Each structure stands twice: as C-alpha cells, then as structure tokens.
Figure 1 (cartoon, rainbow, N blue to C red):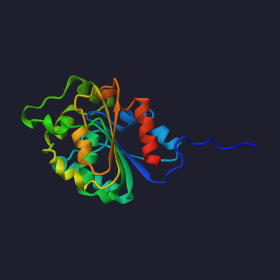
Figure 2 (spheres, one colour):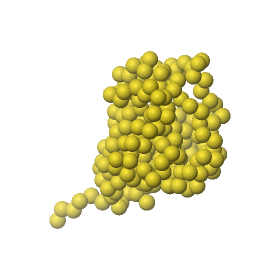
Figure 3 (cartoon, rainbow, N blue to C red):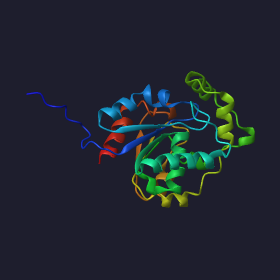
Figure 4 (cartoon, rainbow, N blue to C red):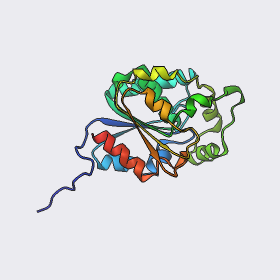
Amino acid sequence: MHTAPISLYAPRMSVPVMLVHGLGSSFAHNWGVSGWDDILASEGFSVIPHELPGHGSAPEAPGGENEAVQRLIDAASELAPVDAIGFSAGARLVLRAAIAKPSAFRKVVLLGIGDGMWTHRVNPDGFELADLVVQLLETAGNDRASVERYVKGFTEMPPLTELSKVTVPVLVVIGDRDMVGPADAMTAALPEARLVVLKGVDHYATTSNFKCQDEVLRFLSE
C-alpha cells in the first residue's frame, strides 16, 4: 500500500511564510538558489516572496525605510498572521515591522542580524556598497543606484527597549563569524526569542547552511 512521505517537521502548517531577501539580492537568488522555497513548499508551507524596495520588480521607496516597513506591514496584514523570515537587510525590515505591528505575525525568524545593527551604524552620506554586495546586485540583475538609494533611506535602529513590543515567538540565527554579531543583546531584548549560533559560518553563508534551515523548519512547525 502506498503511503505519503512523513514530514520531519510535522504538523504541516497553513500559515503563509513571507521571505524577505538581503541587500542587493532577490527572492530567486537568496531563497531559490539555496532551496528555501522548495523546502518550505515540500513541508506544506505557502511561500510569499517580498522584495526590498528598488530590488527586483519592487518600486523604490521615496519615503525611505519607514515606507519600506509600512509596505511589509501592509503585505503581511492582508494574510495575517504570517510567519516572516528575513535575512540581513530583510531581517532588519522584518524586525522593524514586527515592532510596529506584531499582530500581523505569528512567528518571526531573523537571519544574519545582531548587535552590530546598533553598534555599527550606517552613515548614509558617506555610504558605499561593499564589493560583495555589488557582485550580488549585478548577479541578481538589480540596479546599483536603486540599491544605494534604499540604503541611504535607512533610519536609525529603534532602541533595544523597543524590541519588547515584539510579543510573538522569534528565532534568531547567526554565524559566529558574522560581522554583525554577536546577537546576545538583541535576543535578550526580545520577550520570546531563541538564539542559534552557527559554528564556522559567516554572514553570507547563513541561508545555505543546513543547520540554519533545519532550525527554522522546526521552529515554524512547533
């Protein structure tokens, strides 16, 4: 008798999972190449792509990061509550949206962000894209000027005390070689957060790491 394969991460969920890519990248390059969309779909999750302003087909955000946050909130609210997974600049955006409207989310996953988001602040006036980000945006087919304008629209991160407003479960995953790590202070400021540190993993290897994928799937299925 034929039986369907048993999911390692049962029960299967009907909650949509919104994926937000990193700076200079795209949904296809950040989540498709590393297999996230296929893995999530195979486990019964409905995948919702969300692109950063000025990336892919998403229009730029003249209102800067605040407009970008509102766009994400609006998209999540249409399907609320959603699970949201963000990487790097995408995680920054997801976190800010969860602070502003936690009711739009069931669970939040933050990949590749940490305390450095507060200690290493971006100076928009003197900002230049890192060479690796330039390579990423060129590979993804993004316009460099559009990506630069998005970064220049960044606002200062809210105080860590504001993270107490994120009242939903949060999983933080960061490599021990990530330049924005560690993530201890950020995780401690979140009321219901768990931190996973990936040994020997740098910033850009986070999303392709098997342990990262496994931890996220288990978290979403709890």
